[in-house]
Each structure stands twice: as structure tokens, then as C-alpha cells.
Length: 290
Image (cartoon, rainbow, N blue to C red; front, side):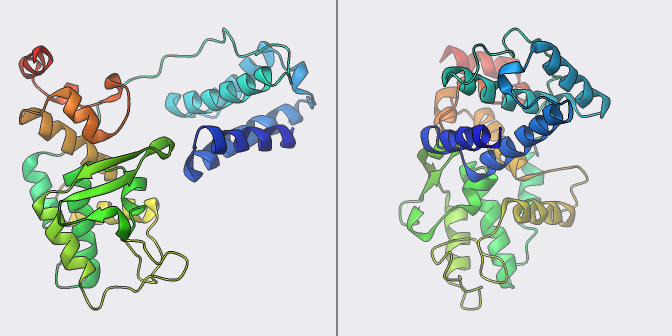
């Protein structure tokens, strides 16, 4: 079964352009699923039945996992079984018709414009790391970039003269993201700082670096944002994705139309733009009518 899993992950990487983060998540979920099957003495995927799948879902529920986590794991298994059916490894997909609990929908967290202003001023620009952190925050709020898109930026992706950044998004899809004047100035100050960390040979073109010269990770970025949220006196949870939601909500509230907003956020179904609940219904109707 490990060979079947390896083949599936290879397909995700080469035909769907799955990111390393996505591949690790799929691999982790599916390895846990295969361990469950082996624990029940099932070593042939052709013998898998809907009843076994329901038993597996039951163990996840007994562990007290969040509905969103169970949904993610089930989605991983669905895709894997669909792949096996397409490849003729199993006669039929036993996950077809398998019902799942509806996951509760939560409104995304959004900071007010006043909170964003405080957050952007939180880093100390007199230090190299402060310059880096201010540039990070300015870019995420100015361009609405995801965490992985932000830390993945290379010097060649930046056109500061025109205020544009080339971003590699989900599914390895590229888009041009707008950089406002504050983001451009913050990037210039950071990149021109003589005492900023020097990039290592493994990532010579990376924009955002840690103290040792390696490219920042998304986990490091989460910690940086959390630290400055506290420093700004914001007493609620906020992540890099909070800045993306705030960027979208503030633009929409200031008059951006939904289609333009979709282009700025990157290629995704319009229904996946999770900002509407924070905007007055009247404003949404006006934008929708336009």
C-alpha cells in the first residue's frame, strides 16, 4: 500500500502542482489511514468497504478531533480512493455515497483599520529584524498574500519601480500582486539595510530571511505576526491569514467590486472569497448590482 500512496503523491505533485506543504498534509493523513487499515488486518485496498470507512471515521470522532480536521482527513482519503479507482487498482470507490457531518462555518477573523495601523507600526525599524518584520506585514496587508506566498518571494519577483510582485500561489499558479507605496518603502528599507542577514547558498534570492540567512518558514511567519499583534496591544488572535482577510474586507468596504477583489486574492471560485459577512448587506447589494 505504500507504493500506491507514493504513486498518488507523485501524481498530485506532477499533474496538480501540489505544494510541498499540501503533499506533507496528504501524506500524513493517508499514512494514518493506512495504519488503521493494517491494524484491522486489511492489506488489500480491493477489500476496503464503506463499513470499514465508517469505522475509521468513528475512531476519528472518538479521538475528539474537530469536524474540520475530520473533513480534511476524509477529503484526503476520498481523493486517494478516487485515484485508485481511476487507475483500476480497485473496482469501485467505496467512499462514494459516504455521508459526512456538515462542518460548522466560522467567520474569518478580521482586524479593523485602526488595529492594522497599530500592527504595521509595531516592529522597530531601527533594527534589521524590525525592518524585515515591517516589510513582511506591509506586503501581506498591501497585497493580500498568503503566508506561503509571502515567504516564497524571491528578489526577481519584485518590481518595486512599478509596485508589483509576482506571486506563486496555490497549484503553482502565478499572479501579479499590487504593492502599495508603504509596502514598497518598507521593502526598500529592508533590502538596502547593510546589516540585514546575508542569504545562504541554498536560497540566494530569497527576500525574507531568518537570522541565519535561511528563508523564513510559514511557521516562523506565524510567530512573527503573533508577537507583533501582542506588541500592538491587540488582544485577540490574529494570523498571517487574518491580514489577508483584512485586506480583502477593507478593499471591499472602500468600494472594490467582487471581481476585482477575486483577481487580487488570486484564482479561486468567487464563493471562496470569505469576506462578505463582514460587509454591510446594503454595500454587498450595491457591489453585486454593479
